Image (tube, rainbow, N blue to C red):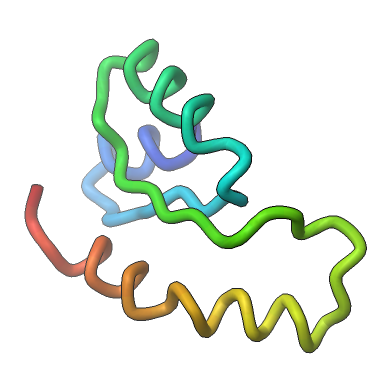
Amino acid sequence: MHDTVWFEINGKPSVAIASSEFTEAAAAQADALGMDAKRCFVRHPIQDRTDAEMVALAEEVVEEIIQALTSAR
């Protein structure tokens, strides 16, 4: 979240991407940083996934990521 907030403060659209296990933690961190940073979550877990499985996870959320990067808050 720190990087996402830093980029946004510096005028660079960004979105934090994490596994769904970290939904609440990301919200808490964004609140602590004082910015409702854009974020997107993939299915958990990601540890020990193959490259092909990671590509599949990314494909599931790519449109959501593009939307987050191109829409105004």
